[in-house]
Each structure stands twice: as structure tokens, then as C-alpha cells.
Length: 340
Image (cartoon, rainbow, N blue to C red; front, side, top):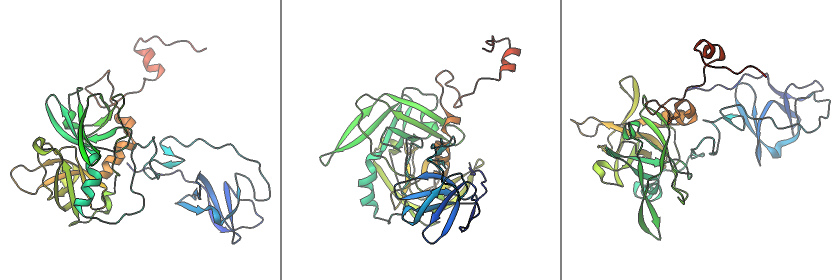
């Protein structure tokens, strides 16, 4: 989903005696930036100037004039609540770093590429095995609070779910099974599910950042971690064969990294340790023909997870519906309380 920020009247130029609309940041060089201050951080302001968002270092700002002409000296203003679906006024998909409202984090600045053997030691603890009475798959933590991603088909029709995690303790791997796992949201059309481990006393989990599948290049090296055929913590390496393989109306990443039953729901990493896809299927009569859901779809699913919230009262559906309008409820014979 593409989210557009509301259009705002803004201007960038040299400050003069004329009044400035919205918020105005007066800079050291006598210039000024006018727009809407979305967030004030420790070292910078985030300003929406209508067609883009600027990050202005605080050291360059002499004065901030909020919602008043430049000739006035307004007092302190009350902070405005961010718009729904935003973090500090910025769309969730663009905010940095992670916040509880977003559940996931991104790597921020582009990190250097490293060897697979080095990355596996770092990200391996975040990859888990997801078990149900009918089978098993893989998954990965996206936050220390126990939120994890897997495929919808791994948990389809199931409510009894357990997650096996390999914690590193003093250089050794300690296997632990968590059985209180709740379904938070699921999208059967994109084959994605968001779960949460809620066992009492559960530690903070190692999580992995989500990358950007749009920046991938054909031929770029990637690797998958998962539990093919129940063989947990299996690592396979390959390349991106194509970024836009159309399958049943959706686009997938095609990779030569070996994918087998049990890998479903596991992460596909680039060589910077970022998740760029969620493995979910292969062509069984061929070799090196694996497919993954682009991480862009995962991020859209997480940002809009309320639309796919799982409702225990309606376990057959991944959607939660709002109450009908009062007129429709009255027409259906429901009792509507009289206005106070």
C-alpha cells in the first residue's frame, strides 16, 4: 500500500518581514524553512514541506516559529497528537527506528556485506521452528517482545501452536519450546501470519531487521535459514534469479537457495543480515527453483495489520469487522440505545 502524506502549503527561501504560514525554522544563514514540524528529535527536526520531508540539524536552527507570523513571538504550543497510522507524524513504513506501534525495525544506514558464516551466528537465534498438530514450518522474530512472522499456510486452521527457539547460553545452544503462542493477524492472500509468544517469563528475543526488496539486484547473493523436513537451523545459499516472478497474480522473488517443505515462513537474507523475503514455496519437479514473498509485502502487512487482525470469535476469517451503522442495525431489528 502506498501512503501519501497530506499536501501542505510550504515554501523554502530567504526569510523576510512577511508572515510565514505553518511552522517556520529560521536558520543561521538568514534562510528559513516553512512547513509542518512532524517530529523533534535530540539532534534534528523532521519537517514536511509538502512534496518531501526534510531532516534539519538542530545546530543550524536559530529559532522555531510555530503556526504564527514571523513578526510575533508565540508562546509554547501544545504538542499535537500524530495522525493515525503514523509514528511522530511520519508514516509507519518510513519512521526510524522501530517503535512498539510498528513492531519491526529496519537496518537504517546501509551496512556492509559480510560472509554467510559470520551472519548465521548473528541471525540464527532469531529463526524459529513453528509447530502445529498437522505439521511444521519456520518463522523469525521481528521484535524482542516475541512478535514473529511465518506463512499463513503453516498455521492455517490451527490454534494450538508452539514455537521452538534455540537460545545461545555461554556459547552453547539451548533448545526451548514456547507453547503459549497467539495469532495476532493473518493474510491468506499473501500467505503471511503474525504471531506472538506470550509464555510467562519469556526472555527478550533476538530479532532481525527487515530490509528493502526493491533494492535487490538480480544475481545478488542471498541465503535462507529454516527447518526443511524438520532439520532445524539449516542454511542454504544462492542468488536472486529474478525479482518479479508472477505466480497466481502475485510477484515473488525467485532464488536458487534450496527451499523445501519446512522452510515455509522462514527468512531469506541478503549479505547485510536483512530479511528481504519470506520463503513459501518451490517447484517440486525442478532444482534451484525456490520462491519468497518480497519483504515489501511483509512491511505493508505489518503496518496495516489491524485490517488483518485475527478474531477468536470468528477463527475462519482473518478480518475484523466494525459495528454496522446505527441505521442498518435498526433496520435489522437490533436494539439501539436512545441518545443521551
